[in-house]
Length: 116
Image (cartoon, rainbow, N blue to C red; front, side, top):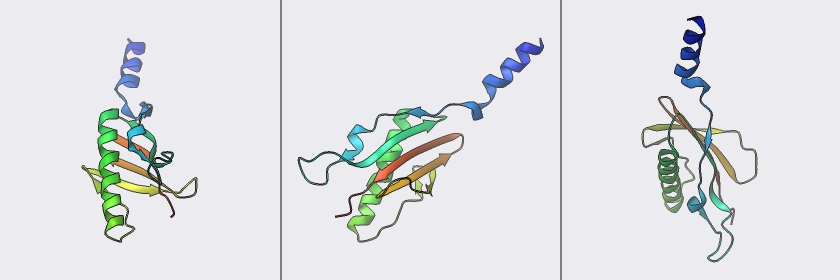
């Protein structure tokens, strides 16, 4: 009986959910047409949600950020699709590390920008 209760507690606790890596190749773009796709969303992961949701949210974040750049503002989106985003300390040049949370779902990704 005690073993069954302990097993149930472990299964019911979402804090122990592991982050899943998600494909984000279509969220990459080249600096120049025909060049290597070295900019955009990389290291996309989700905890407590699906990769499809993480992909949609990362795409929306990217679109909003790029629109801000076109308007002449370097402003990182803080709210996208109900997720609250926070910038984490960078671990590479030209990279924004982002974490978005909504309820029990957390999405993380690196966003690399060209500097030219």
